[in-house]
Image 1 (cartoon, rainbow, N blue to C red):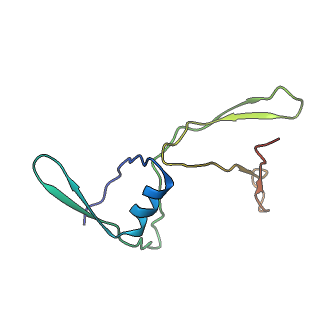
Image 2 (image 1 turned 90 degrees about the vertical axis):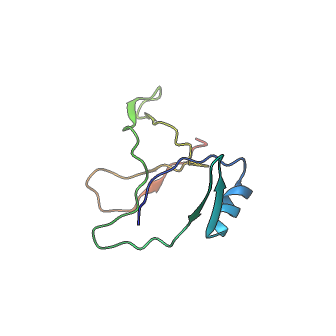
Image 3 (image 1 turned 180 degrees about the vertical axis):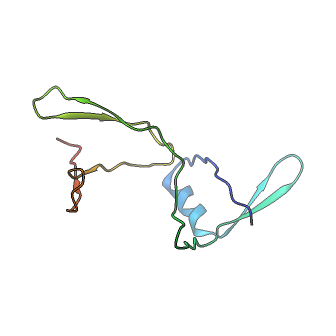
Length: 101
């Protein structure tokens, strides 16, 4: 088996649903037609699902006292983002940041 990453843009969520709802996909170019299959991911003890690496976000003090501005590179694969925080080294729950505030 060979595996690789690909970047794909979909015009809407409907096309994403169609792509994920099928196991076989045919792609044609000038010379030949290729078939791609989506298989279930089986993780071994040392394996983890990975996304392509992104640069670390930048952080700076915010305009308001006690605020922090975090900026990260946009990921074309994402439809939306959620941000969760917890103190470094803490084993407690992650707290979701409300983007409307």
